Length: 557
Image (cartoon, rainbow, N blue to C red; front, side, top):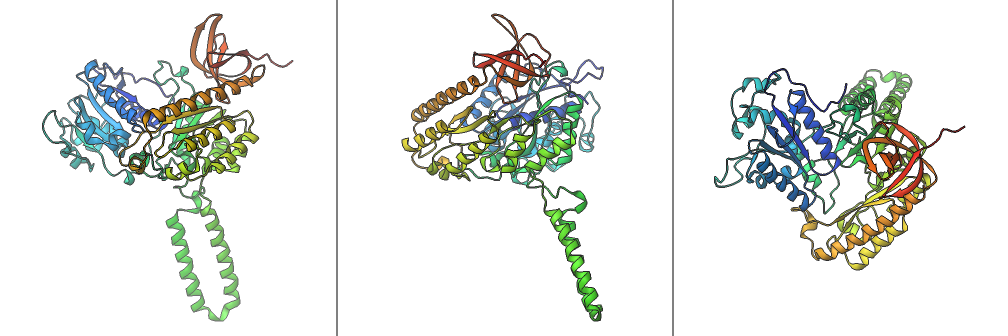
């Protein structure tokens, strides 16, 4: 199976087209890939946003700037493609559906709660656009040819739209499909590629597969749990199928990601299906209890034999319970991917500090098939700020984790997310953060200026930091991060590093360069032209333009 970037026409002259535009994090990108798969499965073809019949904006809402970006995109699309049906989905759509529905040009708002059914909802709402593929679900076949009003579509499909949320008739009412995200149990999964819109699937590299969604933490600044719901995991068999499909298609590195990736498996049952579900285990336990009671009543004179039987039964039940209690976890997921696939390189995206267990660190350190890269969110180095953020670790816990990772994997790239200007952050609090970062062996930082999100506890906290102060602190941390990145890259001059070639060829003074990414997450410009998706060993020669430069290392004699 190839993950092709286009779908061939069924031969008709007019093929319905779509375009998905993603905003924000890797999880949103992964959702977008799953949406593309939904439409392609139904026979629709991709097209540029300026020409597509349906344009899906898959939004982010982690900051106010993310909301602004989505609104700007809606205005741009309305100018460029006034005939398109604009569908807004994603986190912003889940958080503020009425706000989006009121915007000119928006035809439909579909929250994360209904994103797994987005293509079907879209096609039912805009059924006047013909389907070339002949695809029909049971419901859409019954409704063919009808242009649905929100209430009718909702009644037909059991959806729970939020309708009539805006007053007035300034624009045609958009259809809205948003419900309780915490009742949502689906997880969209489709690989995202480094070059998603390449015309040749062979040019795509480094797919990203989302294996976990949602979050059960309640950080005081974060809106994500309220727009993505409870933590939920992609079942292991489905992950293995996706990975094996990608490997068979020729991909050599895979990034696994999630909203709270280290929590993968906590919501799943036993790793051993033969041991049964919790309900089955409960039924067995109840049956065993009844059998034991009946045995005591009916065979009172055979106490010794029954005693032996009961002991054996307890041991058997204990064995089953032990097997049932061996729930899957993130380390077991990694081990399963390594054992059950031929994937050459597995890269882990962001994992929370307290999920970097000794077992995880040891596995990353020992396996040549796991990239030497750790992204460990920090947010703040101040104990007082971390407490107000409702983070589950203290600065000394974080320091210990980073030092353990660095000791076990000295060449690993170690990155972190850091927030500047959280409410109540004093100069002393900020200095504690700056000092912790300066002390630790970071390779890079993602620095964010605090942005108040409606409905979060932090938005109502006193002593909001003035924006100009928060931005100045952001600048200080970015400067420190740049110094650390420079020092890390410099440490590899004259050495060799494994790297995977990407699909970008650059023309620079001195000739052509192929962009590559090292095992430890450093951008590399490799002298010459090389095919993408190829693992090589590079001899690092210099640093230039914020990246390493080098040649393919000669083979040992």
